[in-house]
View 1 (cartoon, rainbow, N blue to C red):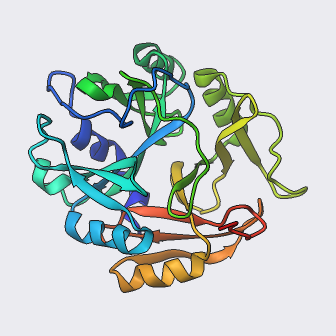
View 2: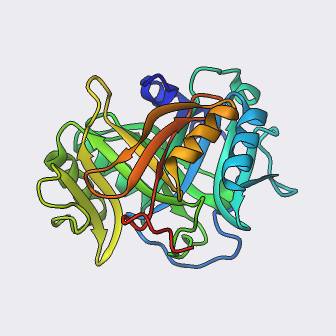
Length: 299
């Protein structure tokens, strides 16, 4: 696997987007209308850092029907940030790392986790073996955000939204479906994140008997993320983001035609369903997963 998201440069990549607390950054909210509700422990956003924004945009437009738009009037990022929509809904953002600081070696997806109090959350990381890579920063309409690494070095961002988190909804084809930590110590990682967001981390309903170490982080009855034993020797612990697809093999083949690469060919997963992993033209890795796990897309 040669994708840049495996290269250990994630901390530098996150700093490109969010900078330091002395820099004023103005980004729009992650919902079109205020919800007034926060759901700590929920993955609420994904940002793509890329040094090939035109090629990356075409890649995701062709594969998943996403649309990309410049920031609304009144927001400023030097033209280096675009919003990503799927079926009209906001799902993430794209950062032009070259335009922002000339970097071409840090392309990756960054997961953003909702927290009720970003200052308290960063204190939790620093007090429990994690790292605070960028301290809480005011992003105006978006809220307050910090970039952190957990005790194993896996990168993510923490966001205390100003106007509330997006509501829960079922993932359609082409939506973000799931986020999964590939960990060297599943029990330790589960305990760490349960302390952050008060997850219930009981036995997963998805994993069949004998499937190996896999934990589901739940908010009540709602699954929020997974933790599994790292399946790749030599790979540093990492948060992996999944998109819902009907046919991972077909999407992976098309990804190559669009300038991407297949990192892991389509195969059955121990927890069920079919999955593959591809890299976009910039090298940012993204996983593909069927849902429901019986392979019947229901659409």
